[in-house]
Image (tube, rainbow, N blue to C red; front, top):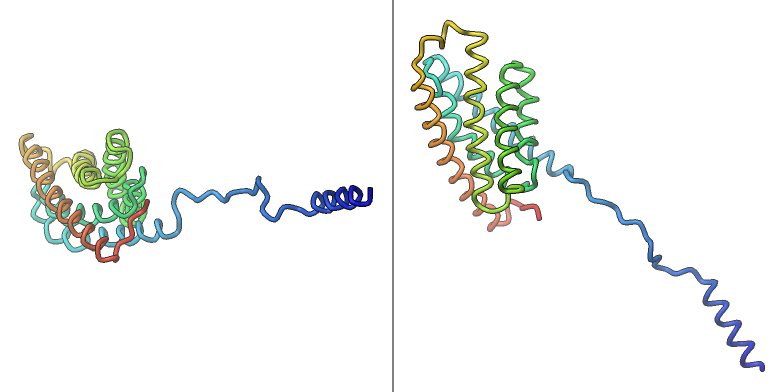
Length: 209
């Protein structure tokens, strides 16, 4: 009888002790973009701004349609591919180009417009086709589509605001310009992909899961 009483008392004491690891402990949800992602996107955007600041004054006075975009595409796609290879998630291209566009908004709303347009074109297509920027093809495709998407938007705005400069140019010139932009941005994107892989192997570039 005494043993039964002691056993019941022991069971009650164990029931009164709270579990040290609750089963329904709340789990903190990781944000889609963290601080490192925003900082890295800003760094890539700053690099794009530096490249454009050097190339545009050298090429724009020549008034050759697509020349600025073709030259800029070589270096811009290089940086964008490294950024996309690092971030990988859907929305990475619009994050980078969106930050870049906001920076350029302080310079000109026209520049803001065609940068954002190019970013949206590349982002929509890559999200639908690749579901993000993993692998080899998606980052390069995103960078190329961005560079190619900017040119028609820039030309449309130029026709609207500066019709006397571009109204007498033959239509085939724009096709040649897009081919040149595709070629240079593809080369820059492939070089960026190679550099991103080497940086990742050396532990200098942390790739997102």
